[in-house]
Amino acid sequence: MSDLSPEQARLDPYSSIAESTNVTLQEKITGLHTVIQKAKVGMLVTRDVNGNLHSRAMTPTKPLSDTQLNLVFLANNASHKFGDIEHDAHVNVSFCDASSTDWASYSGRARVTEDQELISKLWSPILTGYFGDLKDGVHKGDKTDPRVAVIEVVPDEIKYWITNHSSAVRTTEVAYAAATGKATAPGQSRIISKEEVSVHVSEELTAI
Image (tube, rainbow, N blue to C red; front, side):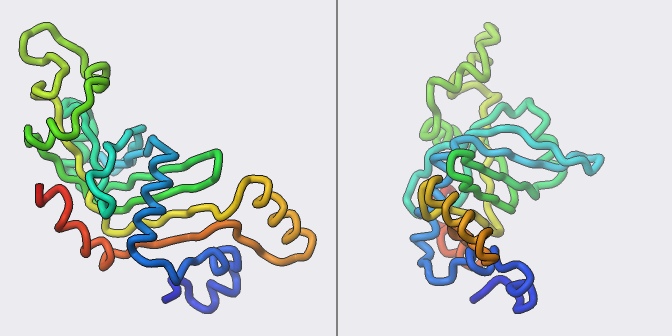
């Protein structure tokens, strides 16, 4: 079913052409994982107690399954973002791959856990470089460091764009459209709705 009203489709032919309506949920998830894997780094946006929005670059951990929709980050619980999340759990995480123009946007809620079993499963030794060893015998920058916490973003809705062709083909399509006065969209705009999210969320980290 189209996400656009008839008038929106008329006035915004780009979005109308790009809108994907015949893709299965698993195909959407696979495409989403591809976009995130290529982009590598996302921008986590939180709201502080004064209502100001703040964004910072974050690298999510690899999905634990091919159906995972939740985003998972390991982070330092002494940083400001944890205070923001405690104040308002609503967050946005966006990704963009400049080489292809693929992008993804998560709207959802963040929750924090310091579950040691989960941290051990997600931990990578390279992360020590972000925490540092404070030489106090406790804050060692390893997976047992009490500063290490998991931020899990549970999406309400996910929107993303994935290109269909190479850069050269996309340029040709846009040039032809400009010359003929016809709109084009060299890719697909996909939405994973709240209803679709609920199919898999219960099977993810909360079940570990």
